[in-house]
Picture 1: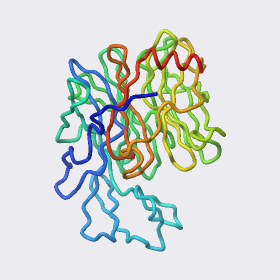
Picture 2 (picture 1 turned 90 degrees about the horizontal axis):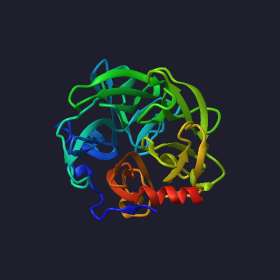
Picture 3 (picture 1 turned 120 degrees about the horizontal axis):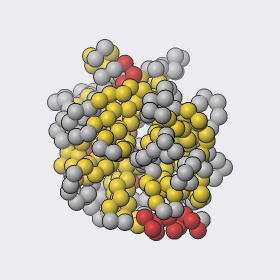
Length: 347
């Protein structure tokens, strides 16, 4: 249903300066999005890794007490699983090491298509819960404050942390709001029944990977958890379901674009409408994806067959859906708000 922009991909690794001279950028993707003053801002997830002088050696960077450490694993080492380009895992202990480390970086645009990317990170790992980096920032404006929740990765697991800013210069850290293992948090842009609301995705060892509802009095303490959209026998969402961009309020209800993956790790986008006054209740949901990986920059890349959104901007009745492709690029697809709502209400 969505229309790809002719300029895609908008931002690629070659467009972004690495944060260290001896590193290279391998991914610029999964960007949070918002409007600020007269610009559209993206908070890119920038994945980078140290340059290896030996193609048979995998370098795994992480932080210990604020200091960078790099482990070296030989490809094909019988003690490790090394087939996944994103990570290595010790066969006996299960210890994971990522092959890259991510931070969040600002990109700015006046037209929503042509972006200038800052040369330095906007937010980088600083505490033990971020030792493996920070990923997939999502921006929610509430009043004059912009809240950014993101995935914090470490040996403790995958958690969700929160920061806020009013000017994208000074940043206030609020710490972990969902402990491991939980990610894909999408915070609503206004209170519902005097409570903050979000969707989130726990990752239990037993049970499926579903999208859940939660609410909070203060953005810190979350409760009233309820499953909203579940991974199911439907092929395209058989492995996992999670939040995409923060929901948008329409006359019909809360419009949410989310992601789902099948058992082959093919990621697509879906959409639903939730009740205005009780976002834990769905009014309409399409059983089919609204967007699938089809273009070459979506089907090929660092981790192929992926379209994944963390940010949508509404402008003049149109949704600008910024999405990551194959864990490598940032691209743009569009659809009218009324068109998508009408489609969902008929589904």
